[in-house]
Amino acid sequence: MMPSPALVAQKPAIALRKVSKVYGTGAGRVHAVRDVTLTVHRGEFVAIVGASGSGKSTLMNILALLDDVTRGSYRLDGVDVRHREEDELAAIRNGRIGLVFQAFNLLSGLSAVENVELPLVYAGVKRSARRERALEVLDAVGLSRRALHLPSELSGGEQQRVAVARAIVNDPAIVLADEPTGNLDTLASASVLNMLRRLHRSGRTLMVITHERDVAVIADRIVEMRDGQIVSDVVQEPEDAVVAQGGRYG
Image (cartoon, rainbow, N blue to C red; front, side, top):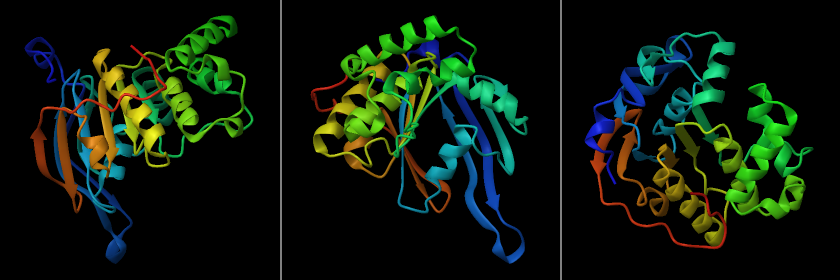
């Protein structure tokens, strides 16, 4: 569903204005993103789609504060986040944004619960409190019985659910997911899609980068990129995610 008029009236969760990202210099310059203007209101579920090289991954890195813009403005919850020091960006990421990656990015030497605890460690939460919170979120994604298992002892779908738990353990208002089902089989993908819909229904702003239609169709809005530019921005009636065994968040 689209956000309510009351939410739209608030400051946007994300506001990009004429954002460009250029890599390299001289003849080797690459314009990965060109003059992108995009507003995402609180409570929206937006899918960013496009072929390889379309600029969608670069845009995700900008949104996630992993890369700075070359030109233009980026306001996150009304705050200008351009040209900040890395420690400032890290603090903003840890407190306001949950990140989910295609490759899971779990630390192999840490158990599931220890991986989920990491954002709380960076936030300075005491050990007992962070363990309690991490276990609570793991239970919410259906993995309480796997809390002490290493990533190598988990299936791909289970690893991605741990990654989602880690992304939401700090209760961020915005969740960004980059190809969240790219390394998963059909059943595991359905479980993750179901979880993403439940995250959105719990009130979070959700943005997903994907080239898969099965992922994009569960969003409220599809933004298509080509050659670094937005070529289409369509509001749609989302399809329900396939219900599968797994997460029960929300």
